[in-house]
Image (cartoon, rainbow, N blue to C red):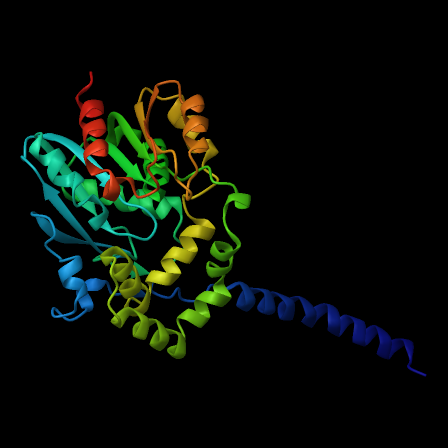
Amino acid sequence: MASPHNSWHGMLLALVTLPPVLFALYFFSQFPSIPDAIEIHPSLASLSASHRVMQIYPEDIYEGGAYFDTPHGRTRYWLVGPPKGKKVVLIHGLSIPSIVWKDVVPALASKGYRVLVYDLYGRGYTDAPDTTYDAALYATQLALLMQHVKWEKASIAGLSMGGGIAVAFSTWFPHLVDGKVALMASAGLIQPSEMSRTTRFMSSPLVQAAADSLPGRMYMQRMADSSHSNPIMELLRVQSAYLKGYNAALASSLRDGPIRGLEWAFKSLASSDNDVLLIWGTDDDTVPYRHAGIMNSMIPRSKLVTIDGAGHDLTIAQPEVVSRALVDFFNAK
């Protein structure tokens, strides 16, 4: 049986030694590790100049092309139209880069507009950072780009997910918007139930890990190397197969990006002094036409242009109608 003296000695020893030990454990467990640098994956610019995709979507598809560096990699942009023209920014959607504006950009430039068009992170000729692709990332990319080109204000126009970016951007950076926001088949209010099971499945981290594996990439490259009658589909295949960050950028955008959950931003836009144009096709099966009615009801200063029979690919299938609606909107006082 232990003596009272030994018991008290043990307790005293514990009281003396335990606090320093616990403090040391707490200190070393809480001490922050050195943060890793963001991994940047290259863009289409990393492919061979002889690759067929360069004929579909050349680096100089528009005049006035250049790159600028950001903490998240290089962004490719183009400035088209008269230097002193009214300034307009065009933001593309989820998967197709700035080729989606190929017929709209020259139409706006011919009417005297100075058009800024660029590839979002992870698409086309812009690098893909290994990060979360949320509304803040995309809105900050545009704010940095406007600062780089020394634009104080501009009209903002977005297609599909680009519409969600435009709404978030207008909320966070209202001083950079000149009072005009155009939304074409805009995302931002999509409900989870409206996203197909395939979309939800393909955006899961597990599927993305499989797609980025060597067998997955080899399979996609075989698919991409076979010609396709639709050049846009061929471009999508090449991005998916050869750009390491592309699939992850799409998946993160679907999970975390300005596709849904932007009710707060639309309410902010509705209470602002911005005029808003909505352009929508009645046969849109990606962002259904009913979203046009929801947004039109939410935003008092909005006007809806309906294109009967049009789908989600408005700027490709109906560029004349879209361009005319944009010009009329931007010209209106």
